[in-house]
Length: 417
Image (cartoon, rainbow, N blue to C red; front, side, top):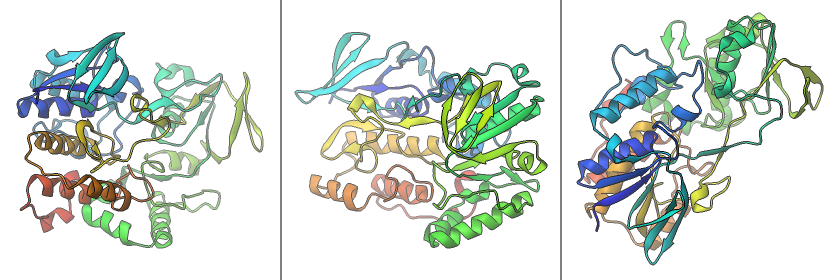
């Protein structure tokens, strides 16, 4: 096997894939479509962007985030951290920037890659492009969060944000704090919105292994009741107008934000469950009324897709969420949604390179397909491991070390510190 390996994408997963490649004696060739590193931290970050998880859950194993970083670092902090990590491992020299991969297909058991209209042939490829692809259909006359370059535009303006995910809530914070005349969030689907801190204490204990295990085992309606009670206690609020998801927390329905509900409680933010139909030059038309605006921000998110492999608005189901059944020549790294994305991507990379070096023995193709079909760890969303991340990591650790055993002390504190 050639010691060259192609890595497509130089965001979080591409960075760690390159470092692990070098660790095991491979030479990475990295194609990055943008002019710099970072993936979404380069292209989608915005003024007041902040991690939804802690720095301890978002650090490489050999290079912790600096102690002087806040517990929940800003987008700028994260980008600086990635820059330092790349420099520390001298990864930049392996990257070809401004090199979008236009085509990727299997030809005669090798991978044909078209980059900037030039064709290349490789034996082994890592896809680390991330699964947040193109923007969901954008509303006319709106701005995206990363297009807001100064807070001055909010002052004395009627600001309406479409979407209640992390970026939508952050934009609403910015609007209120920048003396907007009015701030409104319009959202279609309810979310679990919890503060990063409750009465001065960080709420990252929600990601402890024991807490996630209990949440996974509890019946859905009982967990929902508990979460609603925790919500009301966290914000010292009860309001029949507020709506909550019927599903357990997942990548699609949870937002960490300290201020939104408090602003709503004080009457300085409108938080409305509705459906936006159109946005004209002066009004946002919903299914029940219209909202005049000066600034409309579209924070509805991005499609989950992998267009290079032909998956539009969907993702492939992979063995161990890494490889296609029966084919080890291509790995998808970082296509599992968790609160500790960096650590999972690092472990996936370790698993894949050990597989290439024949230190891991795969079951038969039939058994791989059975795992995908019957033992994929999350039946409701194959790629969301909000509750199952520790079990998934255990699975990979056991492949790397058959003698691996879960440390009982890991049930409290663990990754999130």
